[in-house]
Length: 164
Image (cartoon, rainbow, N blue to C red; front, side, top):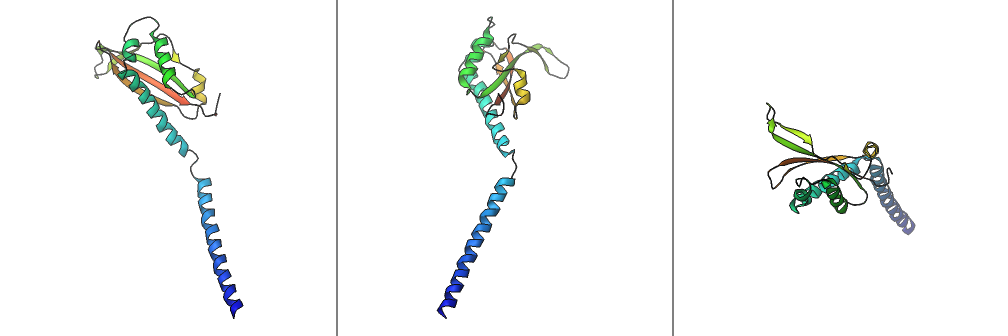
C-alpha cells in the first residue's frame, strides 16, 4: 500500500512541474512574438524629451539669446558647439532656425517664416536620417530679449549600431 501512495505523490509532483513548464513556455512564447517595434515607442519618447530638454536648456541659459538673436556672423558655430556639448555622442541632429516676420502676416493669421541660419547646424549628412529607424522632429518657439520670434526645428536620431 505504501508504494501506491508514493507513486501518487510522485504523480502530483510530476503534474506540478509540468504545469510550471507549460506556464513558463507561454511566457517565453509571448515574449518572443510580441511587437518588435515596442522599443521604438519608448525610444521616440526618449528622443522627444531629449530634444525638447536640449532646446529648453539652451533657452533658459541664454545661449539662444546670445547666438540666434545676436546677429553676429558665424553664430551657427557657437550654437552647434553648445548642442554638441549637451547631446550624447550617439545622437545625430539637424537644427533649422526660422525667423518669423510679424510684419508679413498672411490673411489666415500665419506669420511668414524665413530661414535664418546661413550655415548648417548639424553633425551628420542628410542620408543618416534616411537610414535611421527613428527620426524625431521637435519644434520650439523662441522669443528673444529684443522681441524677435524664432521657430527652431530640431531633427534628432540616435545610433545604437543600426547604421554608421
